[in-house]
Length: 135
Length: 121
Image 1 (tube, rainbow over the protein chains, first blue to last red):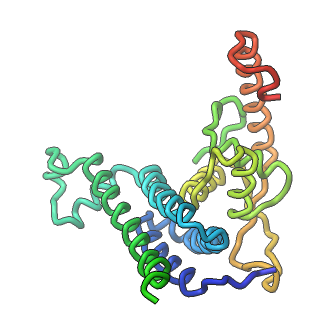
Image 2: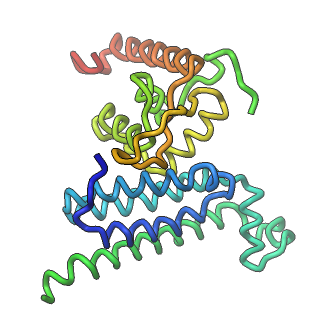
Protein backbone atom coordinates (compact mmCIF):
# COMPACT_ATOMS: atom_id res chain seq x y z
CA UNK A 1 0.00 0.00 0.00
CA UNK A 2 1.28 3.47 -0.83
CA UNK A 3 2.04 5.18 2.46
CA UNK A 4 1.68 8.76 3.61
CA UNK A 5 4.87 10.41 4.76
CA UNK A 6 5.00 11.91 8.23
CA UNK A 7 7.00 14.82 6.79
CA UNK A 8 5.30 15.76 3.50
CA UNK A 9 6.94 19.21 3.34
CA UNK A 10 10.42 17.81 3.83
CA UNK A 11 9.82 15.12 1.23
CA UNK A 12 8.48 17.66 -1.27
CA UNK A 13 11.43 20.02 -0.73
CA UNK A 14 13.98 17.21 -1.09
CA UNK A 15 12.27 16.00 -4.27
CA UNK A 16 12.35 19.52 -5.73
CA UNK A 17 16.08 19.77 -5.06
CA UNK A 18 16.71 16.34 -6.55
CA UNK A 19 14.59 17.30 -9.55
CA UNK A 20 17.14 20.06 -10.21
CA UNK A 21 20.00 17.59 -9.92
CA UNK A 22 18.35 15.31 -12.49
CA UNK A 23 18.82 18.12 -15.01
CA UNK A 24 22.57 17.53 -14.82
CA UNK A 25 22.15 14.22 -16.65
CA UNK A 26 22.20 13.90 -20.44
CA UNK A 27 18.88 14.55 -22.15
CA UNK A 28 18.46 10.96 -23.44
CA UNK A 29 19.01 9.51 -19.99
CA UNK A 30 16.65 12.03 -18.44
CA UNK A 31 13.93 11.18 -20.92
CA UNK A 32 14.32 7.44 -20.37
CA UNK A 33 14.73 7.38 -16.60
CA UNK A 34 14.00 10.86 -15.19
CA UNK A 35 10.59 10.01 -13.77
CA UNK A 36 11.82 6.77 -12.29
CA UNK A 37 14.80 8.52 -10.73
CA UNK A 38 12.39 10.93 -9.07
CA UNK A 39 10.03 8.17 -7.86
CA UNK A 40 12.90 6.07 -6.52
CA UNK A 41 14.44 9.09 -4.79
CA UNK A 42 11.11 9.96 -3.19
CA UNK A 43 10.69 6.46 -1.76
CA UNK A 44 14.26 6.53 -0.46
CA UNK A 45 13.72 9.93 1.21
CA UNK A 46 10.57 8.64 2.89
CA UNK A 47 12.49 5.62 4.20
CA UNK A 48 15.34 7.77 5.51
CA UNK A 49 12.90 10.17 7.19
CA UNK A 50 11.29 7.23 8.96
CA UNK A 51 14.58 6.60 10.74
CA UNK A 52 14.82 10.37 11.49
CA UNK A 53 18.40 10.22 12.75
CA UNK A 54 20.63 13.14 11.82
CA UNK A 55 23.52 10.77 11.07
CA UNK A 56 21.39 8.83 8.59
CA UNK A 57 20.32 12.07 6.96
CA UNK A 58 23.83 13.38 6.54
CA UNK A 59 25.01 10.00 5.20
CA UNK A 60 22.08 10.04 2.78
CA UNK A 61 22.85 13.56 1.55
CA UNK A 62 26.52 12.69 1.01
CA UNK A 63 25.53 9.46 -0.76
CA UNK A 64 23.16 11.21 -3.16
CA UNK A 65 25.71 13.95 -3.99
CA UNK A 66 28.42 11.35 -4.62
CA UNK A 67 26.07 9.14 -6.60
CA UNK A 68 25.09 12.04 -8.84
CA UNK A 69 28.72 12.94 -9.44
CA UNK A 70 29.82 9.38 -10.21
CA UNK A 71 26.85 8.52 -12.41
CA UNK A 72 27.17 11.82 -14.28
CA UNK A 73 30.83 11.09 -15.02
CA UNK A 74 29.90 7.63 -16.27
CA UNK A 75 27.01 8.82 -18.42
CA UNK A 76 28.42 11.93 -20.03
CA UNK A 77 30.88 11.29 -22.86
CA UNK A 78 33.84 13.72 -23.15
CA UNK A 79 32.27 15.53 -26.14
CA UNK A 80 29.32 16.58 -24.03
CA UNK A 81 31.72 17.83 -21.40
CA UNK A 82 33.14 20.12 -24.07
CA UNK A 83 29.62 21.24 -24.79
CA UNK A 84 29.36 22.16 -21.14
CA UNK A 85 32.51 24.24 -21.62
CA UNK A 86 30.71 26.31 -24.24
CA UNK A 87 28.02 27.01 -21.67
CA UNK A 88 30.74 28.54 -19.56
CA UNK A 89 31.57 30.94 -22.37
CA UNK A 90 34.67 29.14 -23.60
CA UNK A 91 35.14 28.13 -27.20
CA UNK A 92 36.29 24.74 -28.51
CA UNK A 93 39.82 26.08 -29.05
CA UNK A 94 40.23 26.92 -25.40
CA UNK A 95 39.10 23.43 -24.49
CA UNK A 96 41.38 21.85 -27.08
CA UNK A 97 44.37 23.82 -25.84
CA UNK A 98 43.87 22.54 -22.35
CA UNK A 99 42.33 25.66 -20.85
CA UNK A 100 39.44 23.53 -19.68
CA UNK A 101 39.68 19.77 -19.84
CA UNK A 102 37.53 16.94 -18.59
CA UNK A 103 39.14 16.69 -15.14
CA UNK A 104 38.57 20.43 -14.68
CA UNK A 105 34.92 20.00 -15.55
CA UNK A 106 34.69 17.05 -13.15
CA UNK A 107 36.16 19.19 -10.39
CA UNK A 108 33.61 21.89 -11.19
CA UNK A 109 30.86 19.32 -11.04
CA UNK A 110 32.27 18.09 -7.74
CA UNK A 111 31.99 21.60 -6.33
CA UNK A 112 28.48 21.90 -7.78
CA UNK A 113 27.52 18.62 -6.09
CA UNK A 114 29.09 19.80 -2.85
CA UNK A 115 27.00 22.97 -3.19
CA UNK A 116 23.84 20.95 -3.61
CA UNK A 117 24.81 18.79 -0.63
CA UNK A 118 25.35 21.94 1.45
CA UNK A 119 21.99 23.26 0.27
CA UNK A 120 20.39 19.99 1.44
CA UNK A 121 22.22 20.20 4.76
CA UNK A 122 21.29 23.88 5.24
CA UNK A 123 17.69 23.19 4.41
CA UNK A 124 17.69 20.29 6.87
CA UNK A 125 19.20 22.41 9.67
CA UNK A 126 16.76 25.24 8.97
CA UNK A 127 13.62 23.10 8.89
CA UNK A 128 14.40 20.30 11.32
CA UNK A 129 17.11 21.19 13.83
CA UNK A 130 16.63 24.93 14.42
CA UNK A 131 12.90 24.80 15.31
CA UNK A 132 13.72 22.35 18.14
CA UNK A 133 15.99 24.92 19.81
CA UNK A 134 14.25 28.16 18.89
CA UNK A 135 10.66 27.20 19.72
CA UNK B 1 25.01 -1.30 -28.93
CA UNK B 2 25.60 -4.69 -30.55
CA UNK B 3 24.43 -7.65 -28.53
CA UNK B 4 27.02 -10.28 -27.80
CA UNK B 5 26.08 -13.95 -27.59
CA UNK B 6 29.03 -15.22 -25.60
CA UNK B 7 28.50 -14.58 -21.86
CA UNK B 8 32.25 -14.75 -21.18
CA UNK B 9 32.83 -11.68 -23.35
CA UNK B 10 31.10 -9.54 -20.72
CA UNK B 11 33.14 -10.84 -17.80
CA UNK B 12 34.19 -9.67 -15.31
CA UNK B 13 31.04 -7.78 -14.40
CA UNK B 14 31.17 -4.74 -12.18
CA UNK B 15 29.90 -5.41 -8.63
CA UNK B 16 26.83 -3.24 -9.31
CA UNK B 17 25.84 -5.12 -12.48
CA UNK B 18 26.47 -8.50 -10.85
CA UNK B 19 24.33 -7.71 -7.82
CA UNK B 20 21.54 -6.20 -9.91
CA UNK B 21 21.39 -9.43 -11.93
CA UNK B 22 21.43 -11.50 -8.72
CA UNK B 23 18.59 -9.37 -7.32
CA UNK B 24 16.55 -9.88 -10.49
CA UNK B 25 17.21 -13.63 -10.64
CA UNK B 26 14.37 -14.21 -8.16
CA UNK B 27 11.78 -12.29 -10.14
CA UNK B 28 10.73 -8.92 -11.49
CA UNK B 29 11.52 -5.85 -9.44
CA UNK B 30 11.27 -2.09 -9.76
CA UNK B 31 14.26 0.19 -9.24
CA UNK B 32 13.81 0.76 -5.54
CA UNK B 33 13.16 -2.95 -5.01
CA UNK B 34 16.49 -3.68 -6.70
CA UNK B 35 18.26 -1.11 -4.50
CA UNK B 36 16.90 -2.65 -1.33
CA UNK B 37 17.64 -6.22 -2.41
CA UNK B 38 21.25 -5.35 -3.34
CA UNK B 39 21.78 -3.63 0.03
CA UNK B 40 20.36 -6.69 1.80
CA UNK B 41 22.38 -9.20 -0.27
CA UNK B 42 25.63 -7.36 0.43
CA UNK B 43 24.98 -6.66 4.10
CA UNK B 44 24.82 -2.94 3.33
CA UNK B 45 28.32 -2.78 1.85
CA UNK B 46 26.97 -1.92 -1.62
CA UNK B 47 24.33 0.80 -1.58
CA UNK B 48 23.28 1.84 -5.05
CA UNK B 49 22.15 5.41 -5.54
CA UNK B 50 19.41 6.19 -8.08
CA UNK B 51 21.89 7.57 -10.66
CA UNK B 52 24.18 4.55 -10.49
CA UNK B 53 21.27 2.11 -10.57
CA UNK B 54 19.55 3.58 -13.63
CA UNK B 55 22.89 4.18 -15.38
CA UNK B 56 23.59 0.46 -14.99
CA UNK B 57 20.06 -0.49 -16.06
CA UNK B 58 20.40 1.63 -19.20
CA UNK B 59 23.58 -0.22 -20.21
CA UNK B 60 22.11 -3.59 -19.22
CA UNK B 61 19.01 -2.98 -21.33
CA UNK B 62 21.24 -2.06 -24.29
CA UNK B 63 23.37 -5.18 -23.83
CA UNK B 64 20.31 -7.41 -23.46
CA UNK B 65 21.06 -8.49 -19.88
CA UNK B 66 17.71 -7.26 -18.60
CA UNK B 67 14.32 -6.56 -20.12
CA UNK B 68 11.59 -4.18 -19.16
CA UNK B 69 8.49 -5.90 -17.92
CA UNK B 70 5.05 -4.94 -19.26
CA UNK B 71 3.56 -5.37 -15.83
CA UNK B 72 2.48 -2.19 -14.03
CA UNK B 73 1.46 -1.95 -10.37
CA UNK B 74 -2.07 -1.21 -9.30
CA UNK B 75 -2.17 2.61 -8.92
CA UNK B 76 -3.86 2.17 -5.54
CA UNK B 77 -1.09 -0.03 -4.23
CA UNK B 78 2.02 1.53 -5.69
CA UNK B 79 3.18 4.36 -7.92
CA UNK B 80 2.07 3.51 -11.44
CA UNK B 81 5.09 5.36 -12.84
CA UNK B 82 7.36 2.59 -11.61
CA UNK B 83 8.76 0.32 -14.27
CA UNK B 84 9.61 -3.27 -13.53
CA UNK B 85 12.64 -5.13 -14.84
CA UNK B 86 13.39 -8.80 -15.30
CA UNK B 87 16.53 -10.73 -16.11
CA UNK B 88 16.77 -11.97 -19.72
CA UNK B 89 17.81 -15.54 -20.61
CA UNK B 90 21.15 -14.09 -21.76
CA UNK B 91 21.49 -12.17 -18.49
CA UNK B 92 20.90 -15.42 -16.59
CA UNK B 93 23.75 -17.07 -18.54
CA UNK B 94 26.04 -14.13 -17.83
CA UNK B 95 25.33 -14.02 -14.08
CA UNK B 96 25.90 -17.79 -13.82
CA UNK B 97 29.22 -17.44 -15.66
CA UNK B 98 30.26 -14.61 -13.34
CA UNK B 99 29.21 -16.57 -10.24
CA UNK B 100 31.36 -19.50 -11.45
CA UNK B 101 34.29 -17.15 -12.02
CA UNK B 102 33.94 -15.70 -8.52
CA UNK B 103 33.59 -19.19 -7.00
CA UNK B 104 36.87 -20.20 -8.66
CA UNK B 105 38.56 -17.12 -7.21
CA UNK B 106 37.18 -17.89 -3.74
CA UNK B 107 38.38 -21.50 -4.00
CA UNK B 108 41.88 -20.30 -4.88
CA UNK B 109 41.86 -17.83 -1.97
CA UNK B 110 40.66 -20.52 0.41
CA UNK B 111 43.37 -22.93 -0.75
CA UNK B 112 45.93 -20.29 0.25
CA UNK B 113 44.20 -19.75 3.60
CA UNK B 114 43.31 -16.18 2.77
CA UNK B 115 39.76 -16.70 4.01
CA UNK B 116 38.83 -17.56 7.59
CA UNK B 117 37.03 -20.89 8.09
CA UNK B 118 33.43 -20.70 7.02
CA UNK B 119 33.76 -17.36 5.25
CA UNK B 120 31.96 -17.14 1.94
CA UNK B 121 30.09 -20.42 2.44
